[in-house]
Length: 255
Image (cartoon, rainbow, N blue to C red; front, side):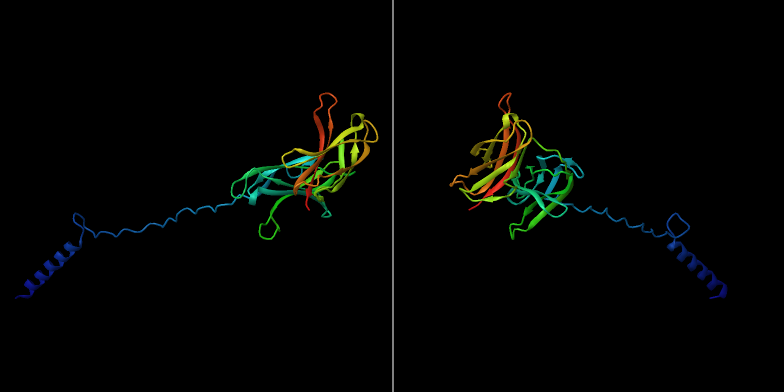
């Protein structure tokens, strides 16, 4: 074979190779697709658990006058909630145990009336709500709200018994305080958790219509079951006989 013939066959072979590597209908090779940036899925926000107890009223920084009502939400063991006020020295001025409308996994609401003698100056306190551990009785689910207790004096004030005082069934309670009521007449009752009076006692203050002291002795029934009771001092309206100016203090009957 001649040299020129061999060169012609080599040129034809090279042309066939180039044509077989090209994209049909195109004069250049097909480019491989380039991967785009990876998009990460949106992060799921963390689930925030609702607090077991919250105080909705009074609010932080509010000034209140005794007696005042504390309201809030709760989801605690057996729906039990304790509410108290503690002053700057750590002294517990008043405490009350209440049962919320539901608990133990079902949210409910609660109300508690706190009543104690006001000071001569405005009193900054911390209003607290909490429950007690079913395991060891320690304070759990504590929430705190700073408030101020005004110096305003209600028409009736109970000085004794004090909030949370423990009294045995059949025990004697010394009831003392001040009152500025019509004809100096007021009443004291011991009420159970349903609001039913188990003891009733009429009391007279020393003077009519101006703040003056009163005192009386009250004996609890010997068969009174253990539990929380309210000692409530109040006046009956001269106009229609309705109950007014209630001042309730919770005690615990315990043998």
